[in-house]
Length: 240
Image 1 (cartoon, one colour):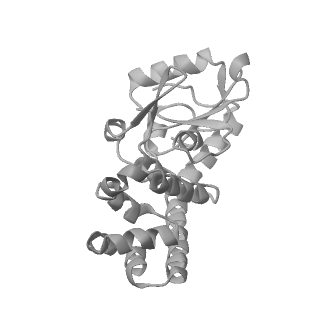
Image 2 (cartoon, rainbow, N blue to C red):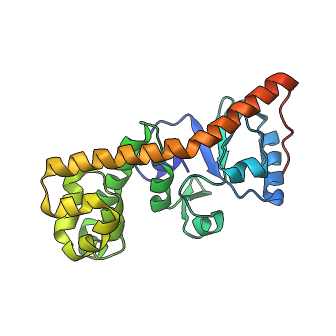
Image 3 (tube, rainbow, N blue to C red):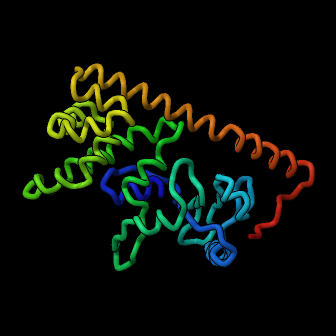
């Protein structure tokens, strides 16, 4: 659900870690704990691997020590900001095969939502993912692709001014339907490219601020976890 997923979607990113979205039920957490043991993975930060923390929105972090994956960091989440519940995400997932192995990725649209964070590194990746989606549409089937739900997706998510204006100009009625929920789309129909670019920057700043506000109480909880660990000299056990 992170940088590795972006690589598979064709928006190459060098990622040192593996971000996984998991259901936080007791049976699955038992399987996850067993897999982490097999990887000789140790927790590297708070909080511990517990359902309550995952469902609250926290990420849980591990570093692998097994020789073939030594140094790999694994981050686990169950409830990222803004995304649907796991069952719906799983139903919409993208499945690919790599070297004979089946991999399940967040759908592109869900990945876009999950990457809207306060981190500066995520926003250029969002733009590249959308560009790849737009330009990756098969040239021979472009007309049919442009009549598909991809058009609404692009209107909701495109972050390149010229591309957003191109789609809005080609589909003014669909753009008008989406404009009330995304102000920059209205500008993409009637404005100049500089106006659209400025509106996209403002949109990004507002989204990053929402992410900061979302994480503020969680950050305070993390600080409390760290204080408790310093006082007791140990962390909570990894249980469901």
